[in-house]
Image 1: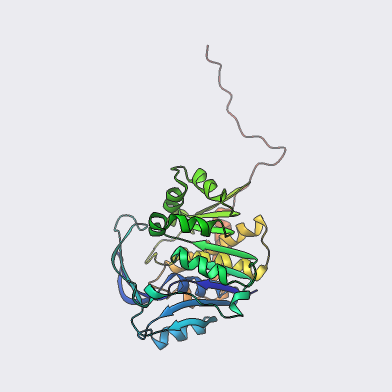
Image 2: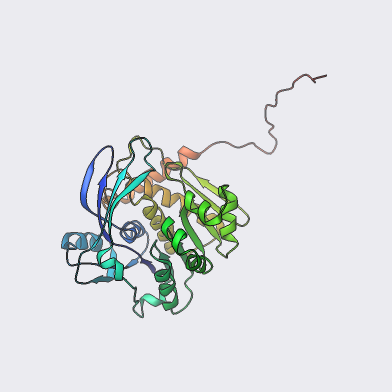
Length: 319
């Protein structure tokens, strides 16, 4: 099945407690496409400037990403500089943001791209997300969207239109609470479900994800690692694994959504182990399958048999 992603491609400068990297390949669509490409054919729609390196273009192609929709225009590529906290790896500050050619980006899909079976709208301006949706020849089997705080704060009405039009919503837990206007994460997610999606996936950083559907919930912890080098792109890698797995299996049952969340979690766990896409782009099937088996073991436990009772302590009545 064909999978289409629309989002940013750019260069990041990353400062973490462990290391620093300058002009590293990044962008939401980049991480998503590389991750999803391990499972499904994926086409990337985005824009870069004249400074986008042939080596980075070749990396995307080598990972099986169709970059026929990656525009090359005069100007500089999108750039972001961020610094992560020393005490909480989930906290980061944006030190510099240069939209450059991405500021004028407006996706235009080819006839073939308009027929994609699965569509992921990365965290770009809701206006551009809606423009992409409007170009689809027919409703994809599954449409998913991500967003960020700035659009919740400045484009809430148009973002609401996006959420009414998609099947799966990805947000970090703070964004779910902000959009749902509820401190309780579950109630906030259900407020988003009331708009029409079938699932809200709340990304919780080192605490994993919580997927809320109308009649069920599923929590997937993060894979336990002894070292996190760079959290950048972990959420996009998660979404890529999630959507790539669904696109390849073609099954959209609640149970398969749960398995997709686990696959996504495993893909995100590789991303954080090195700067940029270095680790994500060098995976082997054996490495991923080994970690997936390790994840199953990490979360496995024996439940109560139907004939088994808890060893409930009997206490004397208080008079």
